Image 1 (cartoon, rainbow, N blue to C red):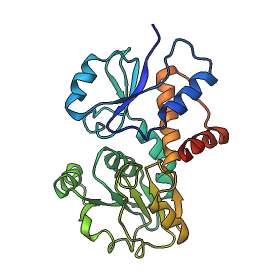
Image 2: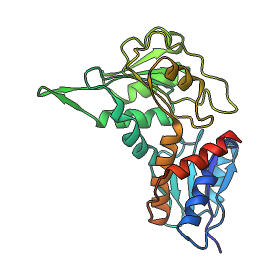
Image 3: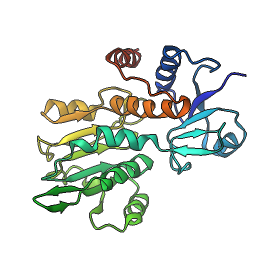
Image 4: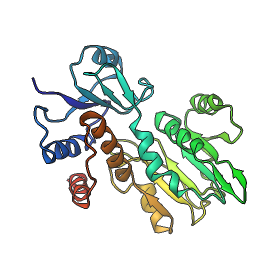
Amino acid sequence: MKKRIGLVGYPIGHSLSPVIYDYWVKLHGIKNVSPYELCEVKPDDFDDFMRTNDFYALNITMPYKDRVRSGEIINLECGYRGHNTDVNAIRQHVVQWINPLRPYVFILGCGAMAENIIHCLLEQQFHIYESRIDTHIKIIARDEVKGLALVNKYHNSSITYSEWAKRNDILDDASMLINATPLGMKGFDDLDISLKQLPKDATVCDMIYNPLKTTLLKTAKKRGNTIVDGLTIFMSQAQYAFNIMFGIKPEITPELRKLLERELRC
């Protein structure tokens, strides 16, 4: 029987996971593996799906990252194990852009992705002139209860919460702005935010990769901000996950990125 690999989430019609995983499986000549599957599972059916499926390995995406606290990839053949592959991608492509002289990071959202970002930021400690500089993190969330719960979880005075209604007026000291909500993603409402108060030297990161250039990134690039797109983070996350599945760390090449960009244009 061929090994089944796939992604579970709701909705997931926007996902490029079949393209990248099938590309690597073929490239590396991995046998006895079925084409990558997208499993669109409604919230009420998620627990039953996780108990009864026969997948060799599963990636977990929204809205279920919070329900599988151990991570984004579950290797069922070797027992119910979790691996947080998002964290690896964030470490590699997000943290490096923080300005240690102004380490103020603003995160839109309060879900599992926002929590992963916080985890990575707290790992990163800056030392300048023999003094430790802590990253100051501002969570800006539409759901005040969940936003405050996330902030209070850390008992850290450098992590604070701000109301969603104030998002346009509090960005003046940010060195990085990160969208960790689904707003702006294909099939979702656009992200309504003004960048007028954001410094021109701040980096803007959108965890969304479909569309490749969200309205947020287009606006940021037009005004001169450095941008980090979600496709870069997606490819890195997939690379780590593929390595866990098959013991092979595939290469991320310009050709692969072009293939994914073509798919996004279709």
